[in-house]
Length: 553
Ligand code: FAD
Ligand code: SIN
Image (cartoon, rainbow, N blue to C red; front, side, top):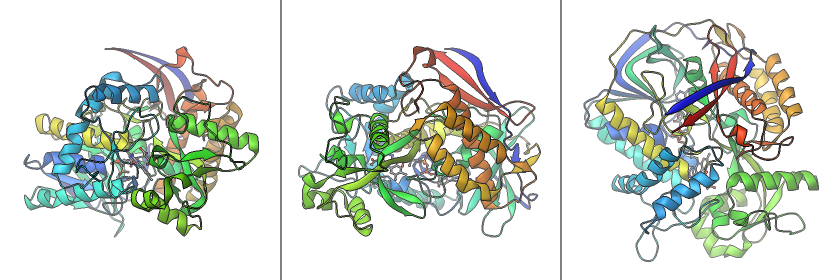
């Protein structure tokens, strides 16, 4: 493999070298530290059962505080029809708009059916059809129905439930410790950069502790809360990505933030926007404007089932042209029985907000949903930083490229979590002494709402150089200052500022439109930009640099 790197944009607006926190009051030791308890983290734990390794899971809130339990549409996996593994890979690569790692995609597609079977064997109850076989639906970008689901549109909560139940087995053999309400602050490192564990804060009593580990697995999910409107739950503040960047890891392709086309316009509980699953379009719903005109007609051969980036961009353009802040998803054609049976979560959410999808179109608009970029890693979690693995949404493994194919994320969590566990069983680094170094800094939590709104406006579905420049100025004004308050609010605000910086730097550098990165000044993709953008902290400073990286296999 040949890797060529060229620096393209350096930004010296400071990011914190470490979060401000009191000194460590306690120390724990384990073999493997898993940070995060969604589909990816719990898949690692499940894969380590019986290995004899001492595993500690640290998670920010309750076990189910991440995105996993919110997943609606399902888990994509090739059907047992001849050629569907290849077709699943092809659809993934097409959606990824030229930036997928084809070997990683082929592995994801090939391992998909076994990953779902293993989850079923662990007790996950997916919906079945009249023939007793797993029911399958379709979503955007898929050339056929291959998505399995549970509880109609409550797939994630069943995945989370099944994997959480596995923990009981792991606990019984005495090798598993679980620390809920425990927050990753920073990664500890040896002199040569190897990650040797983490500094964490117990949110209950406010104490800070060290967890020393031979390997540390980041499974901390996405960064949705960078944006004012997101489908992600409140815990998704990108903490793992920011800590990895501070520890010398590469953040890859962070400009590719996926905006889901159909998010309920107007209702948000705890600032979390209600998703209207793409599977609703998979079952026949269509997007219309206020006059009833079909939004996707003639835009793409798959019309309403085009890949997500194409639908979201078309919606943003129609909304701008019509000067409106939402369009409509017309699901009336599905009928009451189908809506009630297949989409109970969506139906209940809409009805609570005063809209009955059986009788009227649902007001929708695109909103932040998923981070295609993240800590550069392979599908076994290897990051390039010794001792540090990354799995799930926190990672960028090349399977999503510039735009994730629908329902490939839960699948990636299952496959990469299992791959990382296999790797750890075979190859665990020796224990080393380490520490967190560098001066601490923090962003004022009071700056967070304005920054999130500005990111929403200027780094959303459509981006312009002027908007990105305005964001850069705001990032300068809200940059972390030395010291800091050492509160959860300040830690999250600091991490969000760091990730906003990384997104703005990469989005400013990428002078093209590709996948879910759309620039109003250059509206097409360019061959010259068919490269990854890697963001790192500049050694010796706390600014960030973005580098183009071309990988030739
Ligand atoms: P998460 O499930 O987000 O878990 C992250 C974990 O890390 C959490 O336990 C969190 O508390 C913990 N954590 C975070 N920060 C810290 C910290 N500082 N210290 C300690 N712990 C921390 N994908 C699909 O494939 N199919 C779908 O149908 C689908 N529908 C979706 C619907 C919604 C509404 C949303 C929001 C997402 C959906 N996705 C879907 C995407 C998918 O759910 C996520 O990408 C996936 O669940 C991420 O899993 P994960 O294990 O990487 O992270
Ligand atoms: C959805 O149900 O539309 C979400 C699917 C996904 O994010 O993969």
